[in-house]
Image (tube, rainbow, N blue to C red; front, side, top):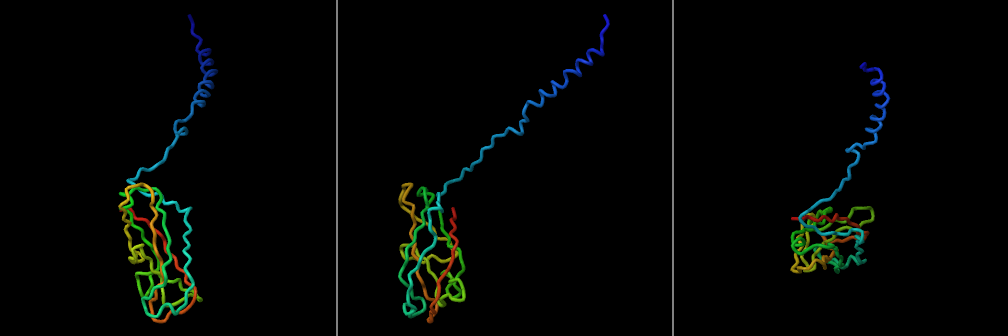
Length: 182
């Protein structure tokens, strides 16, 4: 019996494109990746910045309200909603109001110097127990509430004179709000 190698070779060449095509139908595993992304953290609060209006409007007051350096105007309340967080987490959070310190009193926020800005005063931020929260220093939240809600922290801001001579003008200042998890 004589084997026709040319016929076998022809058959192989005839069917080899089918084998190549079959390999092309199989998808590359590196192109079929379903990626999931997430992160597990110890605990945090879900601060929803979209629900905050971070412009605190202060009252117009006369310069005669500041008869001595260190005089304070009436308080203006503002709140920060910490969203959903547990008491243990909240007790390990500090807030930091980061901004330009007043050159005469580095614990309060400086008024942005503009052509028409007021002079001789800054903005002092306090907690609801009237404790001054120094600018650029962490303030730690405390709560005895073990529930997962009611996480609104209240603060007060006041004009505070830094000299005997307060000059009228605009009072604009900015502070970044940072949360520090201990």
